[in-house]
Amino acid sequence: MGHLVWNIDPEIVRLGPIALRWYGLMFASGFLCGYLVFIRIYRREKRSEANVSSLFTYIFLGTIIGARLGNVILYDPAFYLEHPWEIPMVWHGGLASHGGFIGVLVAIYLYVRKYPEMSFLQLADRLALPSLVCATFIRLGNFFNSEIVGRPSNLAWAVVFPRVDDVPRHPEMLYEAIAYAIAFAVLYAVYLKSRILEVSGRLFGAALAICFTARFFLEFVKEDQVAFERGLPFNSGQLYSVPFIVLGLFLLLRARGQS
Image (cartoon, rainbow, N blue to C red):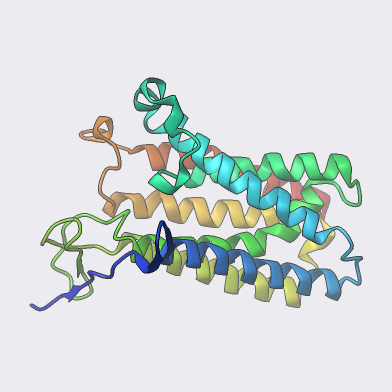
């Protein structure tokens, strides 16, 4: 059976020491599209857009710093203890999505302390949809980088990543991208057709529960990211997803009691 062979160069173009990469383009596109979704929500609610640029600066920095520290602490602390100068070198790769999400939560907390226009949960609700858009694009960036590949598979849609090996594999990063895109479409429709934002934490909780549950199950077809995961019943991505699933369910139950 013929399989798609995906061997795209991660670099789009290089000008001397500067390279434009597909991952960076997808990352930036995700933030731009997320920004446009957020602006649409704000305008629908007739809110002031005066501090939106500041908010997205907080979110951008929280995402990058959190994702980098997440990779350092959660996946390869021994290497970075021996090579601490590598920690700020994000262009060498190594961003952990769970750490990025924690960084976003910290960014929201810091933002609402400086601009107390809304509570933490109210703002998190309104950022849930843009975050799903951004997560979708980031996983597309992983696809262009031939990273976060799945386990070997003979399914018709399996993909060969020559930059990894010549074995057909689950395109796990695309599974995640599709899951996040579907979650966005469903929750955006719910947002438009209901009063889900009337109870703080309800939309945020739904996004957490849906996305991290999807992540938990999709991890079963993902190759282990670090050596210590081999032979374990659950990998790190699954274990790190559990607290976010619990938080999401807690927020949904809390919201149900308030509705």
